[in-house]
Image 1: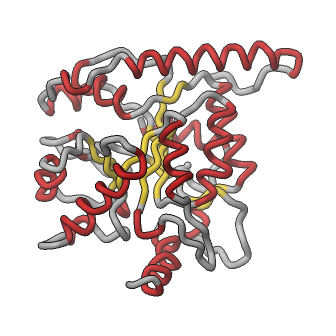
Image 2: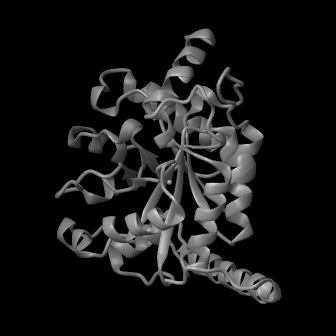
Length: 294
């Protein structure tokens, strides 16, 4: 993410400023499609039944006692370039590898869930589909729309896209970013849009007007784009501090997503764990990491 941020900062200045191991045979393709359609429909119905406004937040001990749901964090989905460094490749999953990872998860019986389902489960113990998993994407990269979303859709999966608003619609030297129309399309298709700040500033350093610039304005913009309330937040670099939780809460955020570090023992809903799906991981390694981490 850090390497990925460098071209973005440059752009911002110019503009002012990652079981069943094998798939079914080809002769079973029709059955697979039918099953996926039924599974997707079941998940949508389950999500629609959740009225989060009636859910009372559980105590931290109750939430922490529930088994964690595997949550994957992706950044760029594209093929490596000669200019990509060793660290940068950790955040870049090559196209075929991403497709193989998603297929592996589908073949292994995983079902994607969205924040409302996770929120209901953590607070009330509401049932989830078998082998639940959540896909999340940070930073607004165009390839998340052109490559990742269609791949997930093929298997009946949905995802959460954490948008950094400074980059919306921009074309950079190294990466292009999603437009307002593409973000809205993802939302309209049943995915969830979350906030990832204005320009990826470290959450631990917010003071004064940072709360307005990094939370209020981006939230308002995303709500104008999607026509929906924004209730999920992802920390830049996965860095957080408990002092900032009240600021998130009073702005209507229900959950905030970090990375692999330990959850806060008093406010676990604001330190929901994810793991970065590394560009170096094969589908098998990804599966092993999911099992080990969650």
